[in-house]
Amino acid sequence: MRYMLMMHAPRGTGEYQVTSWAPDDLKAHIGFMRNLNKELTQSGELVDAQGLSAPGEAKLVRAGKSGAPPVTDGVFPEAKEFLAGYWIVDVNRPERAYEIAAKASSAPGPGGKPLIIPIEVRQVMSAPPVDV
Image (cartoon, rainbow, N blue to C red; front, top):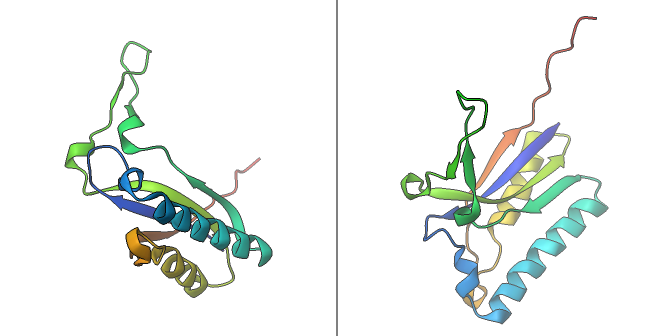
């Protein structure tokens, strides 16, 4: 079963708070994430993992009536949290996805204190077979 684990960052100014952390704190945080990805790769559970650009760089796109898609800045002031990154894992049971999410949630922040980042866990679904 594949699951997407989505790491949410708290609302801010459109920039991630990590940009204001002490260099050693940021290094420890990134090191934690790299080690987690290495463990998941070694266990054969990691399908993909990516960090995303800051919310201030995101654009919102909808189908346009004239054919050209209108592109606007995102609706971020109304959002409580932003998607900061994700993992897609292939695990044998949902509980394993929850275990991985809990570990990711404990990534260190300033002073090494665990951030307890919200991690949304959702099963990746496949489309029904197409009749040929």
